[in-house]
Image 1: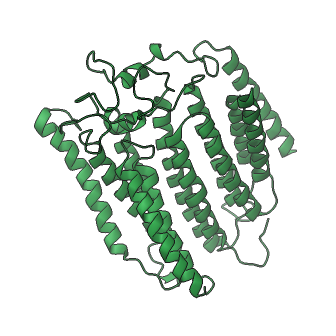
Image 2: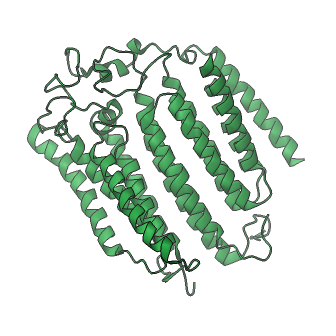
Image 3: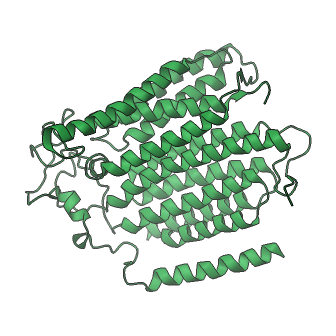
Length: 112
Length: 247
Length: 83
């Protein structure tokens, strides 16, 4: 059931990218899209009545019913890269505010 | 008018995605994945190179990887080339931020805080630092690893900057620590070529599964990654607090 | 049966926070709803039995991303330019 909710969250993020005019809100919509995408990738590897993929003193054999550990390793990388992209985008937004004194895309002028 | 058009477009895209998920044959339904047909069965039994027996916590000695956490053994041993690419992407984005904000010199001043806040935040700063170091040193036994441990170190530095207006961290030492850790990761990879002929081969002996000193080069690599990510993100947070005198 | 009820409740909370983050009028409201969405997603990761991903998303999504957004928002001057 969480799979369908994460697809709807991705669609909300795409809707936000098409509709906003403020640069800060564009970056917020991009982050909403990324959270939905990470949830979808982790939900591919779920096994019913599985346990978390760590060997401990209680779950001490490797023949038990584990969840799939490979999508979790890929999502760990993707979350940290999302942080790097957000910080670089916000650094650009601050420079744009110092130059044009507004965050709105329609008031910035251009070479029309 | 623009809102209605965007809503119709998103609704059509959503209809195709959801019916594609429900009727495709490669996607099994939620929760009914059969692990025996996928390559994760080889990662769990630790027999990518050949057949091996059942792995038991505290008894098996010298298995292929040696770490009790399966996600750590995928990130730091079986697929370490992707981790190297990710460290590069983080480095390029931190480089971009420090190029854009390089000429600013004045630090942004928040409200003047009183004596209780300054004293209490020093105690919490030490606690957060110790928890962060614990998480990336024990990456092969407990969940976590290098990336959240480094981010915790960066958020402890953020706490000290927000609570005290006269706190000055030594930025030059952070930059030297970051470049040293990054170079040592590559040196360990090249040592794998020198001793056994493969890039990033696990050349130290892997002990019993579940002890602190086990799993070969995995704790060393995670410690270096934790220090590198921590100092990088501290530099990014410090650059965001400066404001410039002139353009 | 209880697992299904918890999943539906967490899913509806995530959709509410997501819609409010995208369509609100002020900039400060969007940033705070994004932080709420990230915290509810950590509960979603724990339900799917993934502890490594949950710790990473909790530290990065609720600590560092919100701080960087608020440090950029403080550049905006007080007069005008709220929407």
